Length: 420
Image (tube, rainbow, N blue to C red):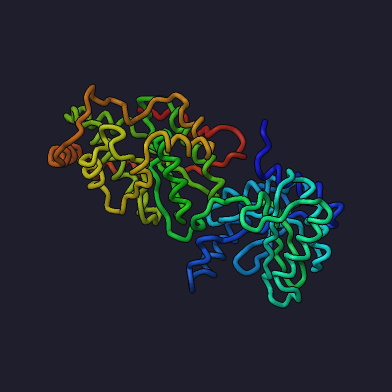
């Protein structure tokens, strides 16, 4: 198995830390958050809270904030895990593994030599920056002295325009940080800075990806899954539980509401839905999700719709389904094709769960041929016949609330088959 970037960086720091007498750590840069002006401190406080929570998965980690960055100091064995956590946390744009050393340019040069022993030979450049102007040596002089030592000791060529390796020295008044790796973080905004949303989670490939994209824009997401129970087994709900547990690492304390939807589907069918069964079912899901969202003080709905992907996602049908919502309905995948969505699902680790077989309530009692264009009036008439407001109230009341976690013991036993 190929080592990940975080594992490679951690191994390099551990190897160099003894000879360089430095402490392995990482600098975490804000990115987009730095553009928030007077609200920056509030956004940074949310990011710090999220970071402290997420770092619990990496064991004992000391964290400190300084200016527009954080610094983390894990145990040597927990360094790779801490880097992985930081790389996937929304709100961080750069993760820079580094050696922390005493505030001496000569010591920085020694650390640079030890770090560069562990990388393939090639040209290099030193990018030095005085983060605190009280450090007595100018950035240009730091770069010149460190670069000269590396050139003398290792014989590496200097190339300031297109180097194979960029060595960074971040200088503070009481410490220096020396690094050769600069890893790209998730970017975006910290979860919780843009409000709350309710995600309609189907159990398929698209909706978990849509949820993650909204988390990256600062939305804290709750989830609602519509199970075909009691006309189907609980398999789709198990999948939803596993998907939310997987997504939980991006925000923590994720909630999942499971709604037994089979009887409502059958009610629509026996009330004459016919070829409108799929659209009628989707409108009812949106109504229930909207009711749950308002009850839980969410401010928007999120779906995994992609324009034209299936018959219910034509422009006209999307409009008809959205008409059932009173909250804004967000569709972050609207312009994505399936291959793009699959690639992102694989990167997130949700793809393998999403493709597990189950009985999908969206296809339950569906007609042989779906409509790609419809007028809303027949759907409104159908909803009047079934007393849709009463149905929505009953379904919302029956929603089972769960808190999925990857480390939770056992299976979600509360998802046993529901009686008809």
